[in-house]
Length: 167
Image 1 (cartoon, one colour):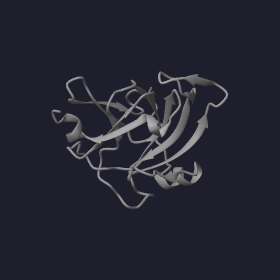
Image 2: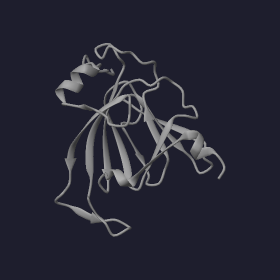
Image 3: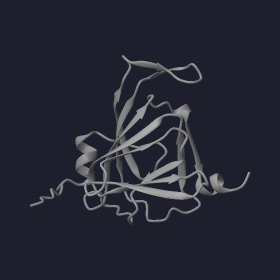
């Protein structure tokens, strides 16, 4: 017999409980850094020192279902590991070597985490329709581990159309 545990928590519950803040450049999310490994430092390829890893909570709210040309994708010099915690399954969109969009889903009925390799363009969002009421809104609560640790200067962003356009 298989049991499925459904969370009775909503987005507002997690925002308050985890003391999440509105993300500074992602409109549909809240986050909080919970760990920065300052005791274990690593030297990265450009000879800068970084925390060995960092961890954030990220609560995604719906953005609609369109992976259109204006969708923002990100590329990191580090590995980015998304861990599913609660809510709806979430898709991680990746660009393959031909710059075509592929997707992976993390959630209770799929895999619980996914690793985006360094240098890979990706976007992670909840592909359902937005709802303004945070007590009724669909959400996806994930943890994001970055190793070596996150540094904003190591993160690049661009629209899908700019990445896919011939140079």
